[in-house]
Length: 337
Image 1 (cartoon, rainbow, N blue to C red):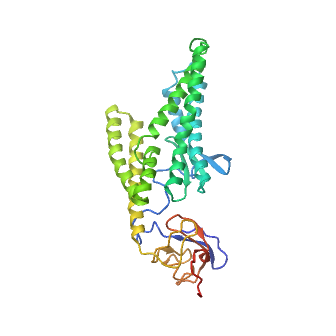
Image 2 (cartoon, rainbow, N blue to C red):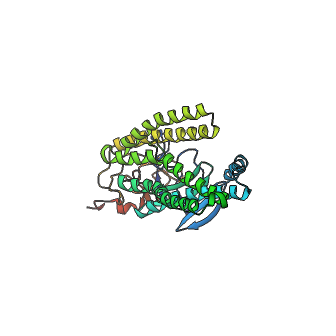
Image 3 (tube, rainbow, N blue to C red):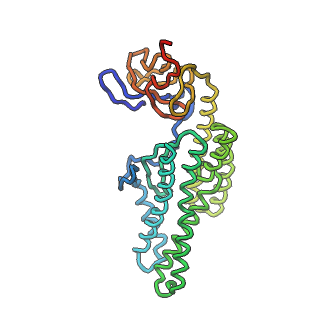
């Protein structure tokens, strides 16, 4: 469904029909993967630098579980609560690293959702390998910066005798240090869609292109997640098994997306029009969906007017970079030339 702003028979934007099975039989160009939490069923916590932060309801269920399983680590339950909050504080800083880096290269990032498996920053960087690489790498970079800071705090605490005088405080610091390190190592595993896998994909993008790099990274991801699943199964760790299933499903979605990108790249392109954002010519075919009559049509053949119901569109979205511009800005040759 296109984003609509109805004004009689005028609509705001005509969207690329990337996720219609009748057209490409695959996922759309957006990178929102299955099993990812959304703002639906979430609590809005705050807004910072134009980015809304939400907390998924399931976070509280897992919080109760964590408090019960780790209640013997401290002398007061308050420390358990602080430990859990600190964990998601680190995760939140990690996700802000992704979001702010994405916006620094001209991408869109306006939402972060925290949930039991960590956090999700909904980012949409420009379809360039360098921009994507920086948007992904900035998240783990936050953990790299935190590592020496937390290490110094632990050394200071040990120097002043906190293990004996303030055991809860020292245990808390050591735990947060370990959590940050584990998050860094885990995220850097080159298994798609973890950060390490997406960094690998971005590097391959320079040589293999957008579609093939994703295809290779997601294919390698299947091998990695199989090993991770077998390891989790051998440990009989339910939590790790859930994480491995989550990774597999999103790796599969990445593989499907790569196939869709390959089909998109193979489509014939229309002369006389170029996307102002990514400089890609649009594909020829009925790949744009009318929001009024729900029928596909070629927006460039009809100059953003649906031939079935005469609905007019102010902007047209690009299938390659997802940016939207008026049809007149796409033209490389004036219509009467």
